[in-house]
Image 1 (cartoon, one colour):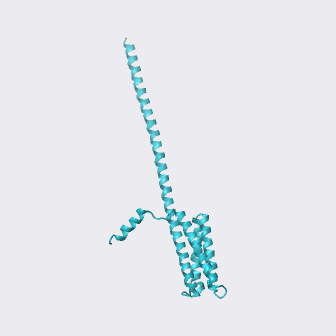
Image 2: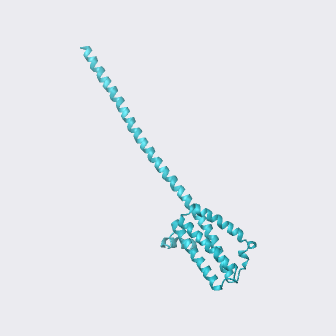
Image 3: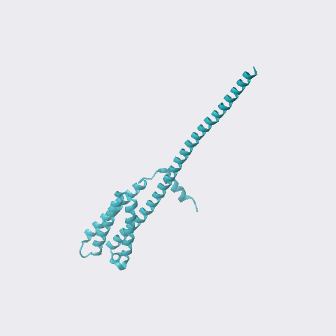
Length: 194
């Protein structure tokens, strides 16, 4: 009888040990699977965060480049208006007037635009520059072009400038209208004493 009792006792002990080991192994497998899923999810979230940060940096780069380019184009437009009205001499379009430096900076900006901007933006920017060059030529040679032709060229340049500005604003997601909340924020900042 004692041999039967020890056999049952040993069997139940082995069943307990095997059950415990099986429980530990199953728990470990579930824990590992859950941990892997959490790690994959954290990795995906981190990738999204990096992608968002990269896009924000890229948008800031585009905003800076667009601003610099449009600043040069606005300056050129003002020079054209001054020259058209006779309040700014023709020297603006001669090498000693600084135009070569201006043109070099402009071509550098266009090269950067070609790299960063979508093709439709770059095309509008190149059209704007070509219009500016043609207008500068007519303004530099007033004896060869009538006042009306020069005025039309300056007007066309301005039209291309506005088209380029609108395309760049759209690319950056800047709306043309203002909403009441933005207007209220600006009003409160203006009325608040410094």
